Amino acid sequence: MLDRLKREILCYLPDSIREVILRVNRTCLEGINEIRLRIGKPIFLRAKDDDCIVKKIDGSEYILSNNELSRIFEMMCKNSIYAWQDEIANGFLTLRGGHRVGISGKAIYKNSNVYSIRDISGLNIRIARQVIGAGDSILKEIIKHKQFVSTLIVSPPGFGKTTVLRDLVRQMSNGVGEIRGVNISLVDERSEVAAVFNGIPQNDIGIRTDVMDGISKYDGINMMVRSMGPEFIATDEIGTKEDIEAILYAVNSGVKILATAHGSNMEDLMRRSELASVINKGIFENIVFLNKGR
Amino acid sequence: LVIFKLLGCTLVFGISSLIGIVLAKVYSTRVSNIMDMITAFEILYTKISYNQSTLDEIFMDIGTQIGGGVGEIFSEMGIAFEGNMLYTADELWVRVIEENIKKCDFSFDDIQVINEFSYMLGKSDIEGQLRNIDMTISRLKSQLIRAENEEKKYSKMYRNVGILGGMGLAVILI
Image 1: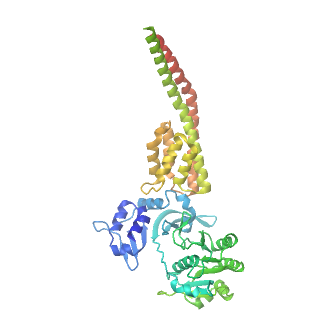
Image 2: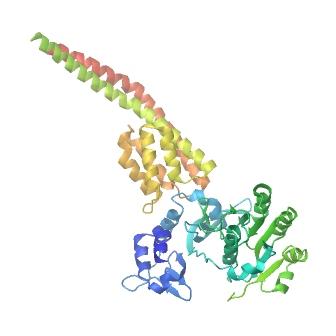
Image 3: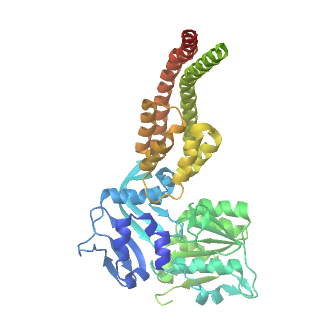
């Protein structure tokens, strides 16, 4: 983990910050989930069950300057902030390795849409970890008569829906045992599943998966169904009217669906009219609820 | 003795003319360098506007498209920007210009315009970048008019002074 951290994240930071971060205790670094950088504030590392404040050799907190944060952001954008304008407008960047950098600052509006973020005041680097085998326990549930069936994975935020979805996409795409792999079109609106960087998915999403990255689910699903001839559409966090419209279009075109949605239980899902309509239509043969221990 | 005198006169004439031609060429090279630099900025404008490629890729492309001294500067710029994790874009631009500017015949003012372009380089959104490039192109166009005037004025003069000076020295030597 430490090598990966150095190679994929710490390389963007100035020497002075890199040095103090590497002085933080090993357990925290090995289990690191986030690095939080805020102008004029101490640097925080968030690990699984820990929250470390980065300190200098003299024991005082390392306070991040405006110049340091701008420099880090510029390095993450390969000295070309304009080239990441769309991602920045969505509030995040994806780095090599699939790590996501959340951005806070002053939002600039143009034609009622966020056009860019200026005066960056904070970055939250979320360290990506692909959990191979995260979908193992669900896999047998989504196979019927030696075929994968449409499935909806449901859980509250933070329960690992995206991790499970990613692993299922990988396994279904590669094929499982006697079951041949299927062509999957992954519509990755927030670049969280495949974590595409420079056109290359940073996570293993299988050999038969095509990715449409950074696009709305509505547009992405419609485009993929028309152009890529998928057997399955995979997408994260469905719920809006447009999402459901696109899913119905895909289903009517003979495509199966693997999707996730926020929710705690069936009642919770049925309270949301859009999701209820798609469930009532029997589009998903399986609805899997994740709990904390899975 | 006459042969030596004739040889000496020819040599003096030749060297003097050559100096004149070389000095005159500086003016014409400066004009073509500024023209190349304007073309480079126009390509940069198009690539940022339509492709939204990163600076390292664009600089490499410009380097291969333009050729000559300006092309070499952009190729070096592309190499320096690729995988850079140390310098901000403005720091790197000024650094590469400083190291490679001798490949061209720019004046002090031209170099100042080229360096001042770096202040906003890579730091803003597309609109900001395009405005910065536009402004640099129009400043370079003003420099081009000055360079063309100077070429007209001094290029011929240096060439003539070289040739005539050489002839004069040769006559004195004889």
